[in-house]
Structures are given as structure tokens and as C-alpha cells.
Length: 106
Ligand code: TYC
Image (cartoon, rainbow, N blue to C red):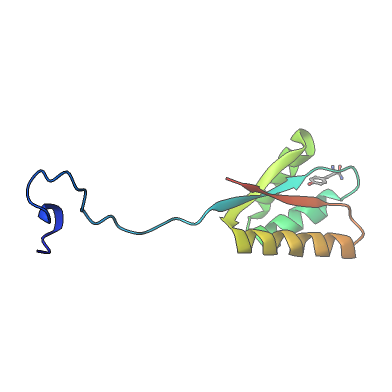
């Protein structure tokens, strides 16, 4: 009989309650590393354009990375994180900046 929790009678010991199958995908931080050569303005622009930060947020993150060596640009599913990291590194390389970003599993 299909009757939810009581499928095999009361106290059968079988856990038959339907669990909602909403598996969350793993998330990845896009981490930005400090260096001595990438201009501050370029980092702020990257944070605004690729990570949808306001100028104030972008400046705050850039200064954090500048002072502490590393900071989080955003958290995404793997494909989005990987795409953003690649786009940022491509743009940096085209502008001859050594800016590095990495993924870190949450
Ligand atoms: N340290 C760089 C400078 O003084 C600025 C900078 C900040 C570079 C953040 C990279 O991820 C970075 N021009």
C-alpha cells in the first residue's frame, strides 16, 4: 500500500518518508591575489564589470586584497566561477597585468 510513513505498518522501522530531493550544487569562491604591479583602478574595474560590485564595494575589496594579500570577489557554481576567473585573467593578460584569480571550494 502506498501510504507515506506507514507503508509497512506502524513501527516497522523503515524510514519511508519522502525527502525533498533538492541537492544544492557545490559552490566556489573566486579569490583574487595581490601583486605589486596591477593598477588599483584596473582591479576596481574588474570587480565592477565581472563581479557586479558597486564602485564602493569594488574599492573596499581591492583595498582588502592590497593590504591582506587575498580576498573574495564572489561565490558561484563551478562553471560560472571558472568562466569569470578565465575572463578576468584573459583581460589582465591582454593589458599586461599579472593579476591572478583562483577558485576555492566552499
Ligand atoms: N597592489 C597593487 C598596487 O599597489 C593593487 C592590487 C590590488 C593588485 C589587488 C592586485 O588583486 C590585487 N598597485
